[in-house]
Every structure is written in C-alpha cells, then in structure tokens.
Length: 391
Image (cartoon, rainbow, N blue to C red; front, side, top):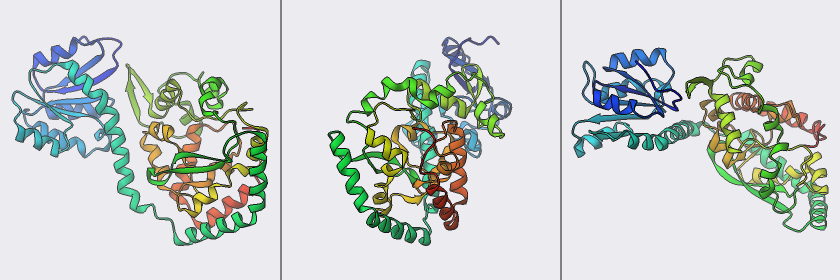
C-alpha cells in the first residue's frame, strides 16, 4: 500500500473499518498501519518499531479490543503507548469500564482523525511521564537511607558547619562587598524520588544571571560538543561507552536511539545541561569559591534537613528533570541526592563528560551505594577541590 511521506506520527489501527482507514490516510502527518485483528496486531508489533499510538475496534475477530489492551499491558514496551478504543456506539457504562481498565480514550464513530491527533499530542507525553512517576512511586519505599548513613550525615554536616563558621562569615562579607544582592542562592532542585526542594549555595553570580543564560548559549560546553554529531540510529554516546543503545524509537521515518533523541530534543528546546567555560556572569569572588567548591558548603543545611546526603546523585533543576523521560534515567532518582558523588570524583571539572556518562555513573551509584563506598568518595572529593578548568 502507498503511505504518505514525511510523516511525523506512526499509528497502528486494529480493525476493518475502511472508511476510518481512508480518513487517516488523507492526513499527511500520519503514517497508518493496520491489522485486521488482535493476533495480527501483536505479530506486527513484534517485528516493527513501537508506534506512537494504537487505535483498536472493540469488536475484533478472535480477540476483543479489551483483550488486546490487556495483552499489551503485560509488555513494558507498550505501557507508555496511548491505546484508544473505537466503536459504533459508546454508552456511559462502557466508557467507564474502559477508563477503569486503563484505556486512554474511547471514541464513537464516525471519527474525526484530527481530533485524535490533537488528543495524542497530550496523551503521548502524559503517559510516558505518568509511567515514570509510577515506577518511582512504586519503588519509593525502597529509597531508605541506611541509619548509619543518616547518622553520619548529621554528625558530619554539624561538625563541618561549626568548624567552618568563620569561613562562612568571611565569604558572606566578600560576596556583599563585590556585588549587591543576597549572600545565598536558593533554587528548586529535584532529588530522590523526584522530591522537589530548595537547594542552597553561596551566590557566585551577579544578580539577573539566569536571564542572561540564553545569550550565552554558544558557550555551553555540552551543546558545543554534541551539536555536530550525526543523526543516526546508533547513538555516539552509547557506542563510546560500549553498550547497546537505549530503546530504539521510530521518529519521522527514521530509527533513533532514545538517548540521542532526548538529547536532540533538549538542544532544540534550549534546555540542556548548562556548563559554561569562563562564564562572564560569575563574580570574582564567585570564581574563587567555585574553584575551591566553597560555594557548595551551604548544602550542608540541606543535609541536616534530610533533603540531601553528603554523598549521592546531584539534585537537578526542574526543567532537566522534566526532560529526563527515558526509563534509564529513573534509576538515578532512587538514590539520595548528594553534595558530592561518583561522577564528580570520576571526572571532576572534566568538560569531556557526556550526559550519557553522567547517567551511567548516577545509575551505578543508585544500584551499589554503601556507607564505606561513601567514605571513599568523600576522601576522593578532598583531592578534587581544585578543578583543572574554570567551569
């Protein structure tokens, strides 16, 4: 069959309604595949990339639309794919039943395809985010900081805060003498279990620095490093690390590694990890306290409040957390948020570290963190205070 070119959304229709099939073929932004029954649909899914949505008739030969939906839910690969039922007549009881079983929507014929396409623009990202949050919620009970780790955090943070209180006073005075504004900087960050909290640092930038970030986009090391990499199914990051690519997506008639797709999406939105060399927004005092990591010390207050640990995965800004929709990323949120961590001591200040490498190290810590492993990271952190680069 002839399919539209330059499509942006792949839909699998399960059924035999020729009028519905033709109506979707008429939309240039959709590539429609169809299978006459649930068994053929499952066979198609086994040998093809995951579609953007599945639309199924309720009444099918050999297997109902409900049975097909239940079968697909058993496979994690299809749990984030919007599933829509269609029927000649929809009664309230049937609609409530479908929604209760997890069907995403239920349409009565005749169908206006554009309405479904509009609906999918919401359903697709919503289902993926909901799935990730449900995984985290299900595992949140496992995010238990060992008692010895929590006791150490409290004792260590209290001791260091008391010991360095004169230094805190000197830094505060220096910051205020150089530039107007508050001494401390508080920003929303996402930590363990996607918990959001206020993250404290000594202010190292001039007031209004965040508003100037777009003007400095060309200096972002992550963007500079990755913008010229080719668009390919095999992700350069995954290849460099020597492991198979993340889930392969099917985007605009091309196969692409999910990791690479999310990275390109972040670049397009201008919301990637920001790391700017010789950042002109940084004050002279700020440059010094960053180089010696003194700017991080107020996070000891976060440790005392139980929002962070001395060692863990770095809490990240809200916009970055919103973009981390790959299943591979959820694991890093199952570990405590920390002041220092595995990737910091692995390549502290290293401009060559990619997002994929950071993700791998964060996940590694989440799987294997121990008290004595934390002590080792703390000792390694003391040797890494003086960074090689001004970043």
